[in-house]
Image (tube, rainbow, N blue to C red):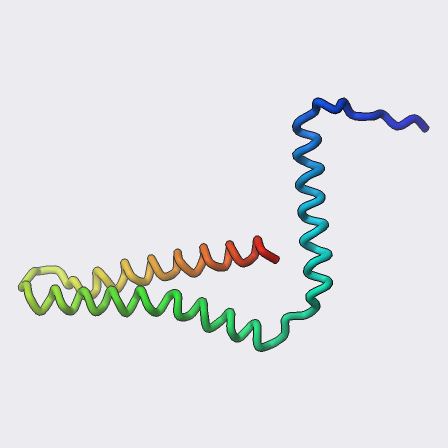
Length: 103
């Protein structure tokens, strides 16, 4: 059976090789670290919770402050609650996505 060699100038092939090498290195590193355990999971759960809770509470506080100063037809507290919750969820999603890449 004859094996064909790729041309050296094939940029796509080198990109694939680099991706495979990066994934292999990441898997070997994860095997070396072993199981992270329950405490790591609880810590991750807590960080994600705080990353959602803090912007939500800040939004509520800002909304209450605006509602106390203005008499509008809309509820600024509810508006900023939703905005804070959305920002907190986006923050948590980005944080988890970034941590997933480091493993």
